[in-house]
Image 1: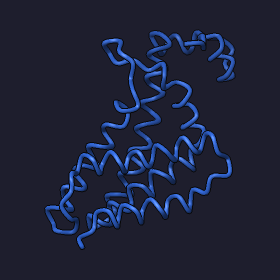
Image 2: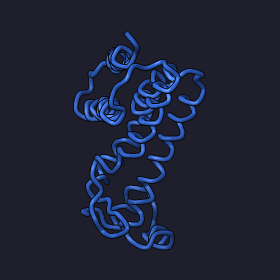
Image 3: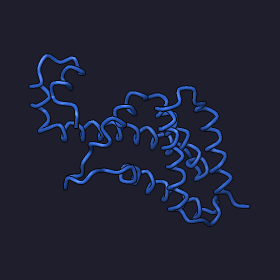
Image 4: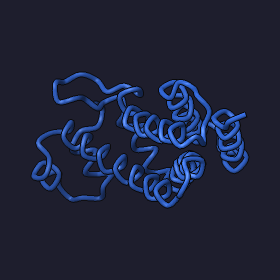
Amino acid sequence: MEASFARITKQAGLSSPRMISYHFADKNDLVHQIAVEVLTAAARYVLDHVQEQETAAGRLRAYPESSLRYLREHPNDMAALTAIGPHLRTPTGEAYTSETAQEPGVQGLEWLLADGQRTGEFRDFDTRSMAVLIRGAVEAAAQRLRTEPGFDFDAYTAEVVTTFALATRRA
């Protein structure tokens, strides 16, 4: 990782790297903790909005709406994740991948979709594939946020919600 404790200290406006090295074993520990904090806050935000809904269709709508809103409202957090993402390591030292990072969200979506099928709100489809598609739509918007300043998040959100409502509803 390019950033040294000295560089991180300067970015954070601290007078000495001792404060960072006191709380974190090394840069990997610091990077991991930043990722955990950002991802936990995002997951909590989305989960709160999803759980407010009484139907599977409402929860499905709330997932991309709240995920995309969080991306738009927390660009610095997303920029931090983008910067540190390639440097994240598992406890065994393996690199995290975008698939690794997305997996908790995909699993939650699988459960939500299966619940909608059980209640008869959703048609039959492969829940894993649909969950990956939905999560991919959120990730695509995150990339656009970084690379396309004029990207219309409101229009994108509306299209994502409509697309997956139509893709999951019973005929």
